Length: 326
Image (tube, rainbow, N blue to C red; front, side):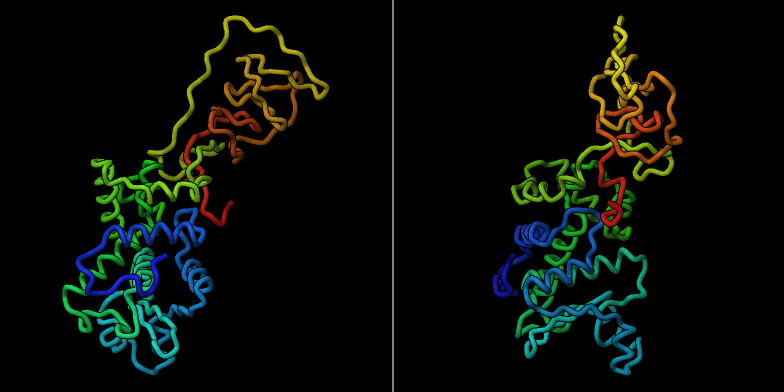
């Protein structure tokens, strides 16, 4: 991770590579492996790992503590913005002040990620205890604001991960990454730039694939198609080609065929009741099975549910569940 002293405010223009690579290092170091990220948990993880205190405080909480009215705090502390990062050089403590009433909620998530970016990128120091238009020159302010935006965008919606799952539209990014419409529009433009010019792909983008391995893997689910997210990323696997002739399979001691009597599929899971390729019942005698759709998560090559025989849909695992649901 970049150290607090690794960048100085006067060091040239916006450093896109520095901010992007810092976000990628953050992803790898602090366990980011799913979208949408839990930005509040990440602030805590960063603070604990670096033995610093970062307090997230709302305008409402600050108003109660200071007895200063809410509007005065918005006007005089965060200067009409959505939030502000503050550093106390005497205690070494940070505060992220947020306006909790802005909408949509994705805007608050972006604000927290943006202010965290200022901290991680070393924009705050003993000589610059907060970042406002009034405390910096226009050039300094625009530079660090851009770098914090780059960091926040790559943390909340990593370009290459979103590119890999094929969800590039703003509406999809709002759903998958928990972004506001404005932030999602910006990320859509960034992703389309990557699609149009692969020279913008660099090693640090590739380095975050391993943490997202489970999120990116293809799986199938037995579900009502209308309940699934991101319909543009859902597909059915093709029907198998049926053999012209297939010998009657042996029946094992559990009463199940050794292979599918319809398509010949021999790749049968121990718990399978139906063939995953053609949906044929795998037992010589009828047995009870779940009602369709049953919610079973199956292999990526399945066309039918191995538990109930219903149709299954193929998509990325990360599009099926939020992180806390798995």
